[in-house]
Amino acid sequence: MDMLGTLADSQDDAFHAALYESLIDMAQHGQTHMADSILESAAAHAVAIRRGLTNLLSVPQLLRERIWQRIGEEVDPEPAFGMLTDVDAAFVYIIRLIIDAYEETSKLATAAKASEISRLYTNSERKLMEYAAEVSRANRELAQLEQAKTDFIGIAAHELKTPLTLIQGYVDILHELDPNEQANSLLEGIHRGTQRMNIILDDMLDLSAIDLHQLQLVVKPVTLNSAIGLILAQLKQTFADRNQQVETVDLEALPAIEADPQRMHQIFKQIISNAIKYTPDGGRITISGRQPAIGRVQITIRDTGVGIAPEDQLKIFNKFYRVGSADLHSTGETKFMGAGPGLGLAIVKGLIEAHGGKIWVESPGFDPQNAPGSSFHLLLPLHVQPPPGVEIEYPESPGRSETAVA
Image (cartoon, rainbow, N blue to C red; front, side):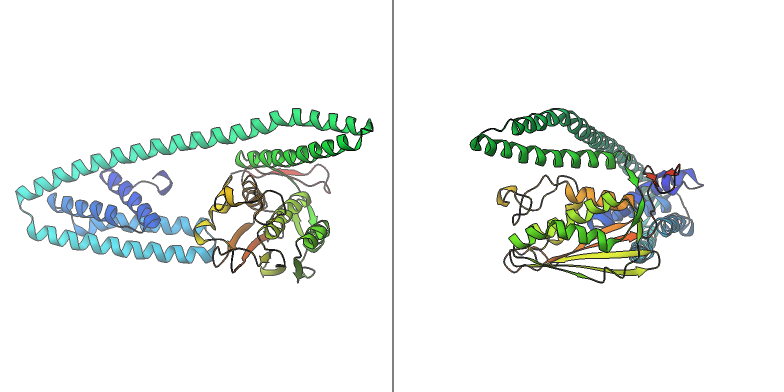
């Protein structure tokens, strides 16, 4: 509740907190029973203590104004419009329910009933506060578990790097000893395995840096047409092996952006590789660019793949999340429906947000038979706009470096 401030009248603090919790419940689950109970009890209590209806209605009205203010300050205009509409609809419902409950209670109330109502409200308030305390405690425990997981990822990746480097070194030495053909085949298999492990460990370290707000960006002018063209050239044989067609549209018209070139390469290679992986052989991938607003560019990567179910379209950006059962996935980086550790899109999202951009996906749904496809949209600023904690270096401007702070 601190982020919304407190009311001048301290007796309304509990009502203010409970009302806010009920709003969250309405927004998350679309159910009003929690709000109904709180508002009806508050109206009954107000009647019992002869509190005026106008005075009672000032609490939700003030809360509505503060929520409006926070949305206006922190949310982009387009999604903010829908959020504000939903907030108004919720408060219209709340105010109507308070008025109806207040009037109904006023008609039925007697001194004895008012006393009982007041007692019930006090008990409800106490139980609600106990529930809120329990939720707060659970949230703290979840945050501690999340931090422990982040720490483990970073520590494990660092510790595994050293022995893996030794293995790679010994493999290189054995190659130089000119072993026989059979030994060479075995060494090549070990080499491929260590390369794959190195990629996964690098991803784990990147994810740890993102979670701990320790990411560093080396910023230069980046021409997206050239950056994406380089990736397509690297994946040329993969497209041929999968008999897939790739097309670029309007990329050459895009202006250069301020970004970390290596991170941009990492971002686009991951998304294009995903498009290859989840598009059947013979499919098509289209990469297009446009400028939807001043100071921003948008890249869209469309495929004719299996698609993504609506309930998974936000979850796929969570770390370690994989759509469907792992038993149904093949292995390999470019095979159809190839499995992975579930880190790629989480890292992509973190890197894009570190530049001040956004990523989202659109898809009619998951359908391997009809392949409805997916579209990944990347919105990037022309000038990097890092969130707090991201360190920016400008190698073309010696001595210049910045760290975004809260």
